[in-house]
Image (cartoon, rainbow, N blue to C red):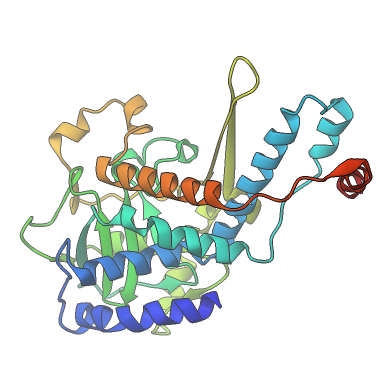
Amino acid sequence: MHEQGLGNVENVVAPIVRGMIEGERVPARDTEPAGFFATFVSLQLGRTPTAAAVFEEQATQLMRATVRSHPAADDDVKQYLKGVRVTSADAVQWTLTNALHYAGCFLDLKLKLLRNETATDFITSDAPAALHNTWAQHLDEHHGTIGMACSGLQVFLPLSPRHVALLYDDRVYRVGSDRADVVPVRDARLVKQINSLQVTFAERALFYQRESSAKHIDALPWELRPEASARVETCRYVADDGRSHLISTRRVGSRVKLKSEIFAVRAQWLRVPDTDRVRSWRPLAMTFAELVREERQHQERSKPRPRRPEGPDESRRFRRVIED
C-alpha cells in the first residue's frame, strides 16, 4: 500500500523534477510545487530500512521506560527487558506516515539546484536524500544536528548526473548569489564530497549512469560509512524523581566534511558557540512539528479506549492473557 502511495506522489513530482533537470526551473518558496517537492523529499527519508530501525528503536525504548517505571517492575523484570525489542512488519508504513505529517518542517528551507560542470558525475543511491549540516560538521557526529528542525540543516537529493537539489537553511548559509536559483559546481572535490554523502546514507546500493563512474566510486571514502548496527543512536534521560523519561532516538550523522566556498556561513552564525549549535532549531520548523505533535496526541486521546474487564472471572482471564 505504501509503495502505491509513493507512486502517486512521484507522479505529481515527476514534472517538477523534469523541469528542474531539463529547464533548470526551481519551484519558488511558498508555492504548491515547492510543497510537493518538500513532501517528496520527506518521503524519501521515511521509506528506508534505517528510518524503520529508528521507529522500532523508539518504540522499544518507550516500552522499556514505561515498564521500568511501573511499581510492580522488580529487578528480574528489568533484567529481562534488556532482551526484549519491539518490531513491526509495518514499520515502514509508520515512518512514511510520520514523513507525510512532518513534511512541512522542510517548507522553510530554501531550494536551489546545483549544476555539475565537472567531468565527474553525481551518483545516487537507494536512500538518495542525504542530510548534512556544514555549520556544525566539526562537532562529533553523535550530537544530533541533522534533525528536521535543526538550524543549519542541508538536504542533498541527486536528480541526475548533472544536477543535485539542495534544500538548506538560508538563515545560516549563503549559497551562490541570493537571487540565483542555479549554482554551478566547478570543483570536482565538491562533487566527490557530495557523492560521499551518498556512500554514507545508502542502504545497499549506489547507482550511476556512466561506466567511468565506477573508478570514481571505488575512490570514495568508504571508511566513513557506518555499520548498519551503528546507524541508530538513543539517548535516555531520567528525571531526579525517576518517574519522568526523555528518550531521544536519531540517525547518527555523517562524518563527511563539505569544504567549499559555495556553502558560505553567514557572519552572525559563525559567532554561535558550539554548545548552542547542538541545540539550535529553526523557529518555523519547530512550531510546525509541535503543532503536528499536539494534533496527533489529540487524535490519540479521542480514540475509544478498550473496555475494562467486568467481574472477577473476566478480570482473571484478562490477567492471564497479559501474563502469557
